[in-house]
Length: 391
Image 1 (cartoon, helix red, strand yellow):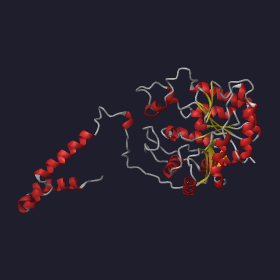
Image 2 (image 1 turned 45 degrees about the vertical axis):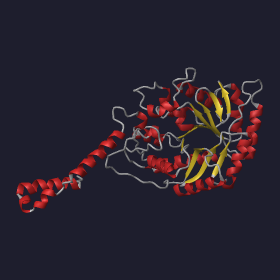
Image 3 (image 1 turned 90 degrees about the vertical axis):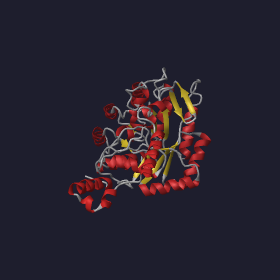
Image 4 (image 1 turned 90 degrees about the horizontal axis):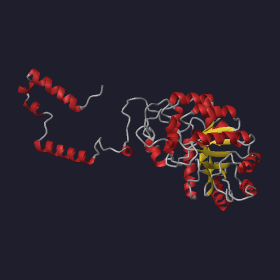
């Protein structure tokens, strides 16, 4: 048990009094005493400090920032166990210097290559591609889709031609394409009401497969965003900022998964990557069913570490079972600390720790302690299979 100086001092004084030592050593009676004015100033300072702190009765959920007090092992992982391919990032670095700093960080933490999901087409894609071209061995560019004219007769051929042009420019995949329930979105290009299984999208999905370009598709959002924003929502602290429960006409999360399922079955020659576990982090068994039924499906694990780390045993079993279909991704910038947090969750068996500055949930996190084989698959082997399909 740990003791403090004040505890030791009180212990000594009690025994000194019992043994009558204070009579022989008067100075002992003064041990530990503070001048009255010092006591008053300390009490006044504490009172002022207490007045500045919110009362537990008025503390807001958004201000709750717990810290673990458990004296348990803490694993520090500076570099990933194996070289990593990050399959989900964005053009966060906007200048040559920032890109160089990103490369340096990648070297330090063990990121071999980063896939940049630009979501862009036309001059915007070209500009991003040229910006990163100096480091073509470290960054791979994926383009978006031009959805303009989706609501007019004849949509499709022009969008396919732009996809082919981006492919010739250097795009090696498509993404990140969003549909959170209101329709497809690719960066600035929007198609309200048109979902991935819409017949108007058939030509684009088919041509992506023919070109050997995997499609990174983000459907729905975490389940907590659809729940009531009340005391029963255990993800309320983050869900409220991204809430979808107040959009009455939005397709539900299960509805979006059904749409994705139909898309996968219709386009077997096209490889799809479900971003963020297809937002089935709360129901991984359903994602497992999708893997079983759709050989053309992979899923990236990006930006869902906080949602899965609270249930480590179940999640680690899922990783071990479907480790050949999961892809490492971040989607959280390129800060060195961020990468190391993901490694700690994937590689260690640490328990009950918080990363409140990185994530916006207040759940405690736990490590999965994944096996070497699974880590190798998630970190790079699965990605290499996909990327090798692109000449």
